[in-house]
Length: 252
Image: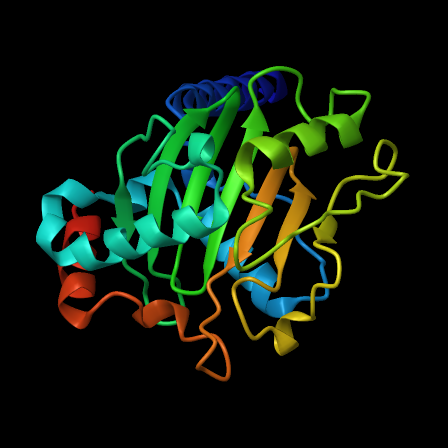
């Protein structure tokens, strides 16, 4: 009897494994509870934004083309944002071969988001943009960050490919730590002379690079100079846009 129970348990275990394998092969691992490493950056606002936005499965995003009129304003804002922060060859509105734009409407306390996945100059890119931040999650198509021996060289190359470090409004320099090859996970690197987030007054004052979960994350702040702080992340989209997207998300 004990052997029969053990056999049944093993059979169930293999069944669960095969289901998870099939789900992951279709790119849906996040939907079955696979979580990224917990962040500890001493920046609660940034930690919350990253963990919420990156934990959302793609199935919770609606193709923007379905609601083009409602999302037109926000997609145009995105066109302006990427023009400020990204090199042309990494910009999905300009030089890069963009994927399909998608949108997610937040629940209270969540984040309204735009999403695009594409490849730019040998780098696989996930772009997530909200009211206050734009995130580029970048993974090289060649050796990964974890695999490469010279992480400083790889990171410098990715900065050149993706970040518009020099413009009329900003000149960003990133001084990479000397111990990057041996201690890189959860390293947050800001441009030189960047202020603390609580003191940030302009989108041109600070950009961050976060090495986390095997990927390079470029973080840009859409800080509006005339306002005292960031705006609520869950009210970027209009009430009508949010209601329409929410209804669409419920049936997916």
